[in-house]
Image 1: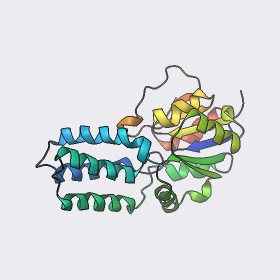
Image 2 (image 1 turned 45 degrees about the horizontal axis):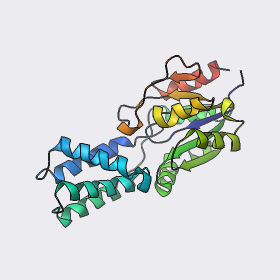
Image 3 (image 1 turned 90 degrees about the horizontal axis):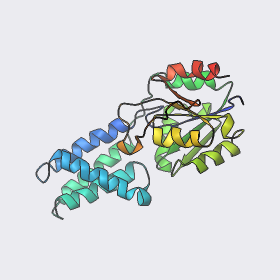
Image 4 (image 1 turned 135 degrees about the vertical axis):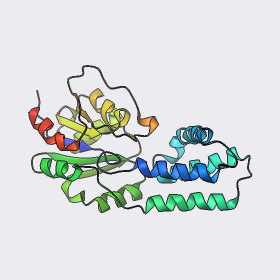
Length: 232
């Protein structure tokens, strides 16, 4: 079996907190529109708008804010006050400026593996925001490459692991999303390590593969180095 030479890490909710800020802003959104619609109804409509708009806006805070504004207009039948729109824009700006908080053992996991493996950061989202978060994380110098992509597909992973590594069969991807981080890499013959996060965004949910020999799950990044070296 080929040895692992390249390890890709997801960023949001794998190395640092992200979804919690979306949830807090969604609570603010519900409070601003409480006179027009119930919280659960707003949540359903907002999620539908986000799904519908992924093709146009992609992943990230800017698309989320635009989807909130669209939902506010729809839910109020065009009567949403301009002050509410202003508050939603301000909420998005606050999200874009929020300090980065690393998840437990994230730094230790990356630092431990960096001397012996080629490490890549592979993340979706807005280019400027992801670059900001990586810079603030203090982890940037530990990665041999950074890939900020619009989508995470088998083809994109294959290209990245070919260009920056020794091919998919010698690569591993670590992340909190089964749909985006794990299943596409298993499909092209790589290794996938799922690190669940309590607040993973609903569209990123999927079913774990049953009995796949290259699939592993850990609940703390502190266990990653031992897992990787145990596969050698």
